[in-house]
Length: 108
Image (cartoon, rainbow, N blue to C red; front, top):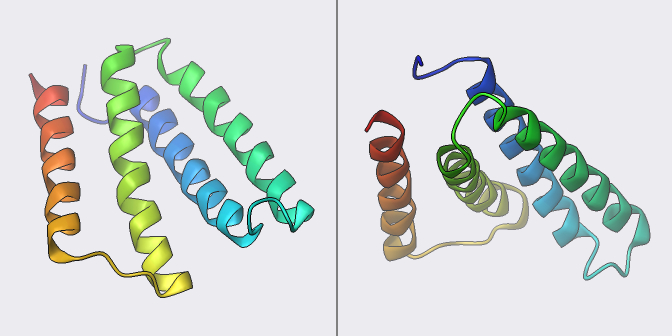
């Protein structure tokens, strides 16, 4: 299997939807804003649908770990960009370590 194929593409798309869902969930203020909350739920369902497609052609552990790493990075960056949330350097170091671990898992 190549590093990037259609199944990994499903993982990336699922992660992007998950990132947007996380940002929408924040905008919902704990589901006080029901529109944003409903949008977040719909996006999570779509993300899991894409993840289900991904595991048809790749190992669940690799798909889920990749999805999580992309989601963690994207959510941290989205929180910083849209909501002015800041991680300490140790937080960014942790994210880099997670991504490196997923890369090793994927290429092993």
